[in-house]
Amino acid sequence: MLYKRLAPLGLALALFFLSILAIGPLTQWWVSSYIKPGVIQTASENQIPTLFGGTLLQSMALKDPHVVPMYGSSEFGHGGPYNPTKLFAGKPTGWTPYLVGHAGSLDLIQALYAGAQNLKGKKIVLSLSGQWFSSNGITQNTFAANFSALQAYTMLFNPSLTTQTKLILAQRLLQFNEVKKTYPILDGLLKYYGHTDSGSIIMEALYFPAARVEMSSLEFQDALKTIQVIQHLPAKEIAINSNDKSQRTLPSWSQMQQKATNDVQKNETNNPFEINNNFFKQKIKNLQKFKNSATKGHFFPSPEYADLNLMMNVLKDEGADPIFLIQPVNGRWYDFTGFPKEQRQQYYRQVREMADQFRYSLADFSSHEYDKYFMDDQSHPSEKGWLEFDEALDKFIHQKS
Image (cartoon, rainbow, N blue to C red; front, side, top):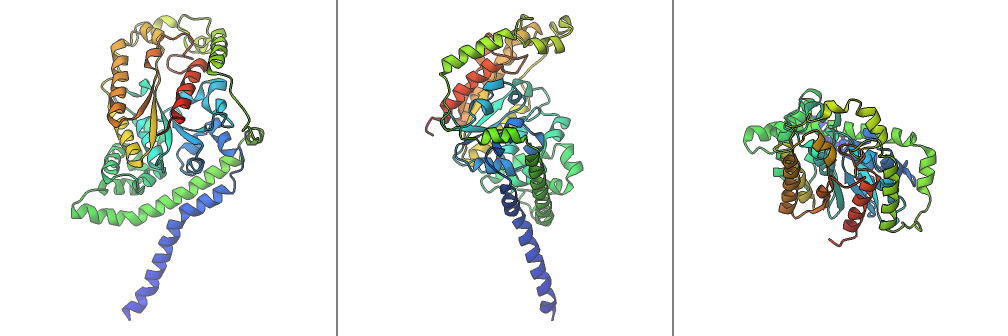
């Protein structure tokens, strides 16, 4: 008699969880109906923050073997026609980038970007900025503004990642108030994930059903946001990007460098730091207040290196083929503010050593701090700077793994 009563309940629960598990594939199918030629490239070019916390559009972009994901931050807003989304539009050399990230997308955030995707055998680019490596690392506010619970859940359920990597990520995420206050179910699952004592195993099992339900809800929200963004993308840009540009060729790198240098030179004339005229005029209104203002500044040590190591482990588990882009800072400006040169060099050395330990490729531009016209401002590359990045990245993409 008891069996007859419980059987329908068991069947109902089984059907409920099967439907929950089906949300992910269903949302991918739903969103895919909105993906027309030119849409993904237009979304990448427009750098839409609401998409960075999702997983759908990025995973769809990665299905194209010619798309290379690039994880970075505010440098993606620079470069003009030599920004990689512009220069490599139409795959003139056989590939095109999909940019993920904006200001605040530090190493821990990038670890979630990567941990929520299938990157096995995929060439990817990770752009690093020295400014991330402060004494405190990523702040509570920066984390809250960039954190994605959906990516955290997807990371935990990603079979490519080892339990050890997930455990370290889980413990790191628990250090932030955003997780505890906004996502208590995720917070509970993270607390007990990966621990081998019987109490933790039981608690993880108890949190698991609610976590799957919340993850499905977030997947559905991601689909809604993605469709909303797609519907508001500029139709003109989509049309341009949808045109067949397979016959498009680039001028030689030396020709493009000459043009980029000439263009930047015209816009860096009102200051001795080779900073863009408009930026200098608008942001550096009282020059003398900046002189020797950063004599105690440092990039080393920093908890950010542990997050960088964590990201490198995520990529190792996933079987990705990454290149790390080391951007320089503006040496003239940093010297003017008194920021210690040795601190900058220690940061560059540390990143090189870490990449070498994992046998990862490097596009190391740390020696370009004083190159003329390389920077737009104190820390972002100019058109000339981005073009040099582009050439190094293009060479990496075409190297056989």
